[in-house]
Length: 93
Image 1 (tube, rainbow, N blue to C red):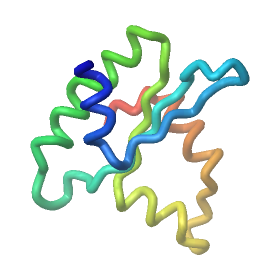
Image 2 (image 1 turned 30 degrees about the vertical axis):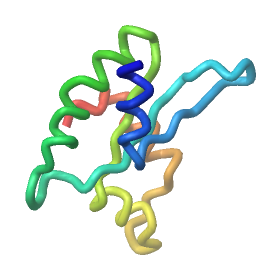
Image 3 (image 1 turned 135 degrees about the vertical axis):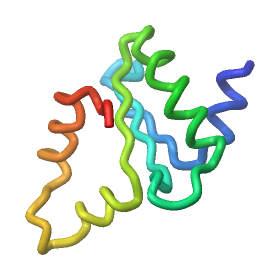
């Protein structure tokens, strides 16, 4: 299965399931685009979101910089607020 092999190759991909074990959201952590861009990250950004959206599954990405901001107590951000904002904007950045 192409999807299974693709999923296994993405080590920072997490799936949120509902009570019936149906996938509802995929969260991916990636290095970001501030430095060298990896082909795998570009492919993921290009194909993953439309593929999941066609199945009714939300897709959210967090760059290393965004995740660092979430972990920094001085930033004033909390995970739930940030995740909600990402979902509302459609993660189009």
